[in-house]
Image (cartoon, rainbow, N blue to C red; front, side, top):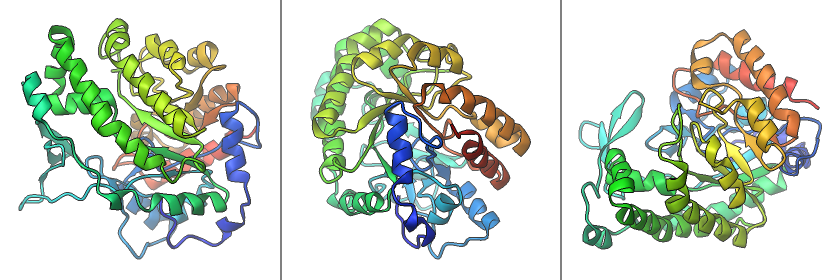
Amino acid sequence: MMLNDKPTTQTQENNLHRQRLTAALDHQISDRIPLTLGSPSCSIHQQAHSRLLDYLGYRSKNRAVITDNILQIVETDAHILEYFDIDMLWLLPKAVPVRLDQENISFTDPFGRKFIAGGGFFNQVEFPLYDCKQEDLRKYQFPVFPPERFEHLGDQAQEMYDRGFGIGIDGPWGIYEISSSLVGTSEYLMNLILDPNLAREVAERVLENYIIPFYDLLLDETSSKVQVVGISDDLGAQSGLLFSPNLYRQIFKPLHKHLIDHIHSKTDAKVYMHSDGSIFPIIPDLIEIGVEGLNPVQYTAKDMDLEKLINNFGKDLGFFGGVVENEVLSFKSPQQIRELTKKNVKILMKNKAFIFAPIHNISQEVSPENIIALYKAGAEFGRY
């Protein structure tokens, strides 16, 4: 999150922002819950961001920087961060430059995955390891990391720290997510059952050849400043896990543990994991391997009721997100959003370890009035 053209008043905040985050991470009470906006899982679509700036009367001299070419989310303007009194900022590598085709509707990324524009995003249509055999996997070359994607992070971390913000840093897609995007979701899910050795080898190569080197570059110059390190793997759908708990334990759990142990060897920051959907049956496994907080807390999914999560796991986990679903944020009134935010915040505050954010990225159709209602309610009802 760059702070170019930053308002001057925010420089006088001392360490209150960081104190709020520190308290939440330690399951302690501060004056209120910490608010955040800008991670890969709680950012804002470029169109909604532009309309919000217009509504607030700000107009940046530069076009917002896209941080994810596929999702079309952007760095949040500093005026928005100040307006909402955001406490926790995010360090992000620069997005990989992409070259659109002549019609500006598709691109192929460094993995060899092809994406086509549709619905305000880019949707994957080609999978470089579809129908692969082990020899194909062994020949496959993972992307290299251009240094310019990461070289700003050290100075940016220092600036955020000096200005008293809490700091999070977030990495790439997760082990399952990248594996399935290389092979194809249906194909990879079938491999997990029919050819588990191949599925495991894909996941192992993703971890060793891409994800761990990525986190090394993220943390090399930031490890002493960050308080939260985000990892990701969407393991759930609305009605349950994408695969059985036993299959998770056999293939992905050891790899997630290896990643988390590696991160903990480089920093004292807490590790928070993003996983959409219904993941209740494996939450004890995540706690066992070192996950210290969950995002996005998708309470409409099966068994993900907020009270149930707090009662079962509140002493072991922090919660990040969990306020309102996208359908509510997109299509309900500001008053309805305010009331639901009040209800859910009061539940999530009970374990004193709640970081306020929407459940998903703020999508393109969300009105400025609804975004304002969300964050104003969070600040108002999140006081202890």
